[in-house]
Image (cartoon, rainbow, N blue to C red; front, side, top):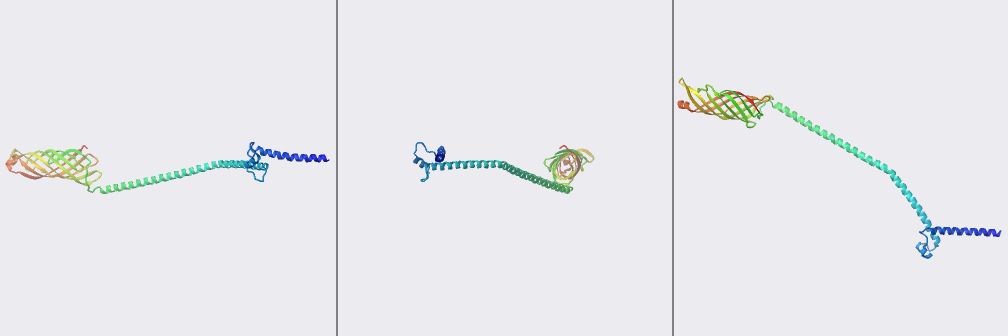
Length: 306
């Protein structure tokens, strides 16, 4: 009986020492707390910063346990970090969706602003067109109201040639040097003029057209006045004897109106021409009549080439 108790006690003591050895071995297997082969136990105790009241083995166990706890905490931290990273990755699509939503919202706002700008431009263009139309209507009304009233004349024609009847009778031409100024010229014949006889007549005048008496869609009625010269070579009879001749150089002051048609290249004119003639030749030698004042009357029709 005594031997059995001894063996049991020996077994318990052996178990205790075995546990202590295993603990020391576990602590020694941790390189962070194991003593180096080149140092003594006091040097190892000092290096590990053990407490003064603490044995080296207890210190190694404590440090080993703290290291294992730190590794577990680190593992937990890494796990936490992995979970946080996973949550961040899970949130990234939401953020992407949010970013896309924000971009879509900005695009929608930009589209609405563009459409608003287009509507504003359309409204502005319509406003300008309306103002132009109202202005054009006002101009047309003023033009219609101005028809039939006098205004300044500006010719749309340049050169015309036609026939003149009266004193003289012959060909007539007119050339506009400006919008209201023209050169008028002619060559023809005067028949039984005054108490003289028949004779060839040549003239040239400069005409001003200061006003249009009537301005209509079909024609203009410009009034004109001018100044010019003429040469007239004539025959005459004296005491029943004919065959005498004479000539005159005169100053002309034509005054007239012209029906200037707008739709066809024609115009019709009628004019009175006061003339102061200076006579010479055989008539002057016989009559001693140096100057003579008279008034010629003629009308004509011209065709305008341009």
